[in-house]
Image (cartoon, rainbow, N blue to C red; front, side):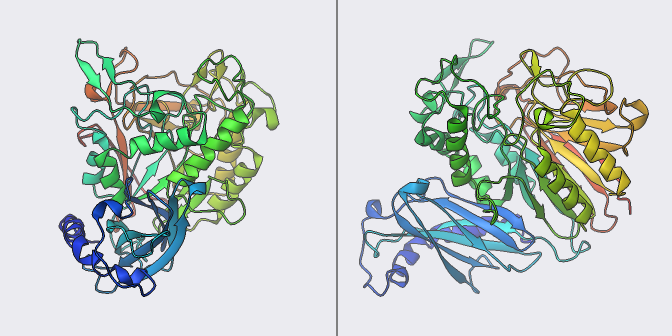
Length: 526
């Protein structure tokens, strides 16, 4: 794995050589003679670049141009591009808001891949953008090759806490970047489409939190362009763009990409924030399109709109990324006696996919990446938003999906399953054990919670006793006033590190500066 010095040198070298590359743009102009162009007339990449992990040797490179243009990706195994390869990608057009993705396949394993993205103007082929550099790490071929590190968090620009340049912007992204992870898992609430950002927010001590503001973030998103504008807003932050350019990602969604606590049949008729769209299915369809346009998510051959997927990263770890939004029933009292359509959260098809995928996994560690926690009670008015229903009895309602899955894992003797989750806007470590549980037919397991990235801090929430959770750690003080601003410091990410020799997994929780505040080592079982 290349050192951070190499990565920094790569970025500096790429930017420094941009002028030289401009003179060679005739390579992309189908033989047209090179001419000098005014920089303002050239295509630009205002949101930078990003790469999404799609497998141990396959990544999706993403970017957005400011006009109709052809995406071109050059990549190499050195930051000097001595062995450069070039792929002509798709056109960035109005239909995708000028975003584009190119898949890099059959990449060398255990290697940092350096890439640069250019766009060729489709109106004037002589005009080619300056290169936007990026890099990511592919999975090692053997578990013993090196240690593996991944980080996770969630909740970006929530509760009106936007990009505040005076405070330093989205600072947690830089703290995660300093870890030099192999990849990052964003567990949802990648945007807060339903929550506007105001220019100023008064803090408890009388000081003023000052946000950058845009037209798209001045109201709840209803149109497709407003959803797109929420993603563009977040990408105004330099820490996020730099992080995206250096770390491969696995991105999920949760509720705020659409609407707080949404489900397909939720009624919007009495919500004053929505003046032109009162249909939740229409709102969700626009939100899904924007989510898929603005994140480096690999397309699914069977279902172009499917978000849940597995991402194998070599023999040490496989990630099972869930979608607990698209297939859920309406929020309710969550006390149904049978597992059926009205008690669905993951849904029957996704649950069967997860069971089959876990049973077939050859990875030492199976990481279930869930946008919602298991035993944490998440209320939605008088109803419940997640699995737990607050009733300390046997499994019922949506808990039946978890009970079914946990029993399957036990019966099939699937070892080393760990849950990571978010949504509740604080960090915690939960250990579930059947000796404390009301439903007992499962093996003990851990669930680790992290977030927010840049949003209000809440909690801690009540725990449901159905699966016997023990709260081993909570990263916030009891009785804390809700919706603490990022400047209070209660912003968190999680880290998982797999030892190449022992295969042990060390999970740690970190606060805003990157300081470790909790750690738990888990021994790998055969």
